[in-house]
Amino acid sequence: MNDIIDLCGKRGLVVGIANEQSIAAGCAHVFRAAGADLAITYLNEKAEPYVRAVAETLPASIIMPCDVSVPGQLEAVFARIRRDWGKLDFVLHSIAFAPAGDLRASLVDCSAEGFALAMDISCHSFIRTAKLALPLMTDGGSLMTLSFYGAERAVDHYNLMGPVKAALESSVRYLAADLAARRVHVHAISAGAVKTRAASGIEHFDLLLDEVRARTPAQHLVTIEEIGRIAAVLASEAGMTLTGSTIYADGGFHVVA
Image 1 (cartoon, rainbow, N blue to C red):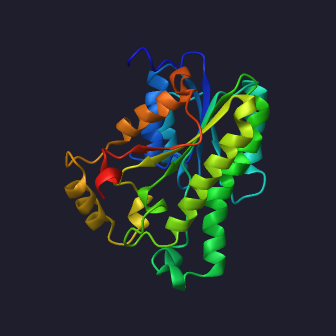
Image 2: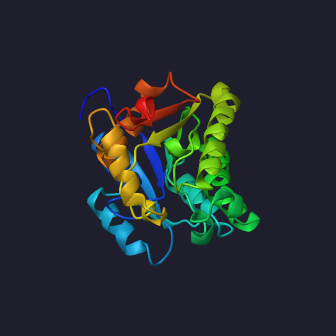
């Protein structure tokens, strides 16, 4: 690990690991390699064995359930962090959801209920997370969330997640302005297309991967570890002059697409 990415003594929360192949897992491994102590969450009992497998390889100090749609679960995670650690230095928010029927429908055909649910889980949960993290970030900190190029350009089959991710990126800018005086830095990481279980819900995602690979300057899809290194810089002192931006971890795809 490069010395400039030094997270020794820092404590971070990673929300949204699904399994070993998820972007959040790649980030968690890099955070740990850089010296951070971690708390991680799993969605539900079905996901728990896959996330615990990641937790054991890290290892993570805290592992808890966190379904942001269940009242009290997100708050319980922060209550545990306050009890065990008393402070928090960074958070990686890697949560996105839309009902399958609404995700696969064109935007004009998505339901109001599906759109609202996608916005609540994928965007508003980051704002909730920021509010809960603030009292624990007594020495400043870093809040990170994951986005995608479909937030700023119309991407085939991305559908309602495009407007939802656009709202998420806008929330990053407003949170960055709101929290700057507290030395809390806020970032969106626009990750390149990665084959994950979450992405498999997007219709024709394999075709999208092929198109992205062909149009990326080096014709190389980014890996979860490469995205993790960007996240680690943003969580470190080296990233503290950055805030409010969307950082592209996509191999340059966004400059030629």
